[in-house]
Image 1 (cartoon, rainbow, N blue to C red):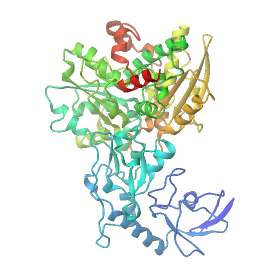
Image 2 (image 1 turned 120 degrees about the vertical axis):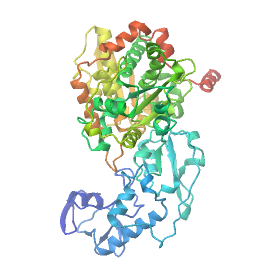
Image 3 (image 1 turned 90 degrees about the horizontal axis):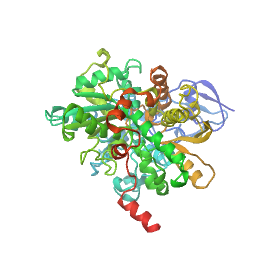
Image 4 (image 1 turned 180 degrees about the vertical axis):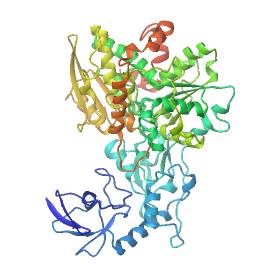
Length: 590
């Protein structure tokens, strides 16, 4: 242990503890911009400077450790002026347009500058630059907003291990860009958006598609379009954060009412097609499980587009292990443009299908050719709005969400089970699938609260969670992993023969969809675990706990699809993960 004094307060900490973390223990607040605990501790922004007795220069508190007898001052006049000067230098390289910036309310630079009284002044030349960026990709970079904190570089390198971002240039021209100076669309970026949620400014953002939906020429203002919207499970855990509402106040029924106020014709729940996904993916798993010699093994889930893009670019040899089932988002679009279109007597091309998702990669998923076009050349889903975009749309419409009363989802695509809602948390897809597989094999429902609880991974500190189950004499080995850094470790372990599994669930974002790149941003706060508790609470309170008991899914099969993995189901609800080039390469290798 190490003893020191911070602003007159005695502190005892473990060796190796930074001054910044020690200060937090005694309630001393030190501003930061670049610091990300355990990921980015480089002292780049110099906003966290402190004064140490016996040392002439000021030091960054985030990357200097406590030593025995150290006496630290965090708020002297010298410290205050140095911090403010450093922040004003950052402002001189930052395009200040706060009123119109979408990060106006969550910008850490704005907060720190305001707290310090720092401002853009004539003392420093305004030296920001503008760089052209691709407009059709989900992740948008604005060089003029970048403060060179390198949080995005570290998050992508150390947590996600995709290594898209890098420090480029030198000297005063040092900045952040795509590694090897290629376009981001050519970089292997999986569009998970974790760089966006960890950016302290708006240098990185998710492409704004609000105008396609609610703009003057948007779908909501087009009388020829029937607008249909779906709400993903994880969205209900977080959208209320933007309005200071608890999950109980901002529940899914309030959100359904809000979306009707916005102007959507039909409001549905993605939980419906999460249940449908379980029916298709679970049936597919049992087919593969009983015919292992005919398939690549283990089977991987396929509902996370960031993960699917990752495996195809980083571990293409595992592409054949992916379930062919489309994601719930894409299944919803396929069912909407066929079954639902027929029910309401509207041509598929006249239905505009919008997804509200916690994910930025979903924006790329809707444009993947071999996933779409279930309804004869018509895209399954037309537009994806993130949770953050939804909240901005609500604000733009001046809707007082606190005064909105609950309303039910529309039918017949609005009913979801508890198994469906836990899709939002890491481990949820696996647990939901196992519940239904158990029923198919035994003819009985398992204990929904306990039987497969071991695959819940939201609180695990291990790279991945594994569990083994005996279901009607069949031993099923399951694994659940979230974040792409952990996924890389798992795939390497499978490649090297260190582990063997039958069924593997992968979510690209830490904590799963609840921690997705489109969720509300809170600087240096990771809320995925708390949001996961919300979805499990939804599950526990739901009258329906099993996907196979969803009455609207049962009707869909009886009236339209006939059976899980039927010929029509395969046409509408499944995909071929191999594009033409991948097929050609596989053929050439054989």
